[in-house]
Amino acid sequence: MRLFHHSFLRVCSVLVLFSLLNIVYAQPASAEGVAVEASVQYTFGGQIDFTAHVQADLPVKKALILFNPQGEAETLVKPVFVTPPGDIKYQHDLTTRPITAFSRIEYWFKITLEDDVEYTSERFSFYYEDNRYQWQVLEDRPVRLHWYEGDQAFAQGVMDVAQEGLEQIRALVPLPLPDWTNIYVYASSAEMQSTLRLSGMVWIAGHADPELGVIVVALPNGPELRLITSQRIPHELMHILLYQAIGKAYTNLPTWFSEGLASMAELDPNPDYDISLAQAVEEQNLIAIRDLCQQFPVDAAGNALAYAEAARFTYFLYRKFGSSGLETLVAHYANGLGCEQAVQTAYNLSLTELETEWLKTSYTPEQQTPDHDLPPVWSWFAVLMLILCVSVIVGLVYLRKNRSVSEAGG
Image (cartoon, rainbow, N blue to C red; front, side, top):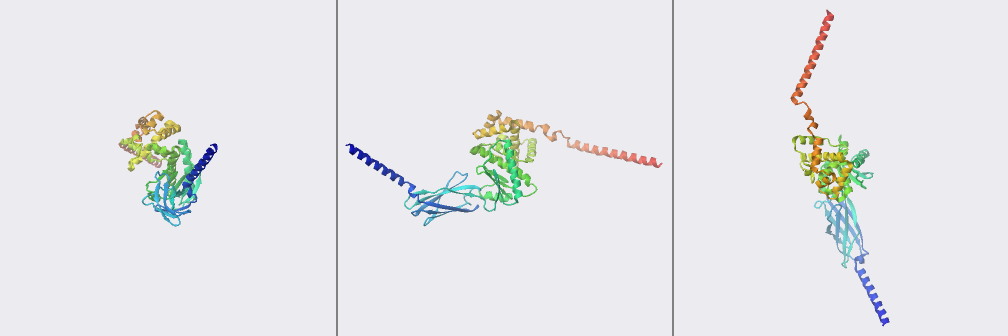
């Protein structure tokens, strides 16, 4: 009986082992011998040509390509054309389905062999750069500068502004530096806009894609090159650092706050801001800050005024609460608090109360230059009186001189 028991256990053990082996070999591991070599060529804004060659013991029955551009949630899945013995081709039309410029695209294949065993390839990737230009590169961590027009001195000038901008940003708000930020400098707004249109986007003079860690900017050569550079580069760098600091919560930052911080980072602030604000105060058509939480007006005048208000109101918060105050506000937005709730929590004052204080201390009647200047009529009268006085003095001097000459002659 005991012998039978041992024999039974031995048989059971063999059966269990056999079953486990069957389970292991029934998995896609039977396709371990499959190897995929892949490559990509593309025409920027035109099409992407994916090619691959599959090496396997059995012919390929069918295949799919899966690819996911960086920063996009959707993974595209497309059937591919397969020719014996295992050549794969797929062309993606960028005119109907654009992909964001300067993004990294990850792709892979799902292959079904003739025995219906599926195999998933390793993941490949390539960088979708605007390859219509011969980019030169200058690196000074954490900035990697790309440009195609201008000499080394031009590139160094842009790099110097970028590094100075980073120092300015960290003086305002102690944000961590990114590993790398890629800055692409176009020689004209038209060339930059052409690139962005081919990616399905339209921007005016510059844009930061914080998730990609990329800044795209137009810096046309001319007398205002230094001024434009000192405004656009630090402005966009602030957006990059904010995203690096709080990640996806960046989208929770109110527009007035993110653009206000970015405007404060500019090395040469826009002088038009004060002109726009003074005019808006005089005409009583300011935009309430709470109305700038989600977006700015699309019309040119309203957009310019919104930027001016955001810049000056954020600077008011900086003067009142310091760098730590701005850092606290960033943290509250990063934790998901709303536009007005975060301000109330950070400063124990409402957004409206702070806005009222800002306007009262910055744009009181005493601070408006026309308020204590002479009215136009009296200004002209004063000028005329001055001219008259000068004329009388000149006349008296002339008469005295003639009298002296006459007496001397007599």
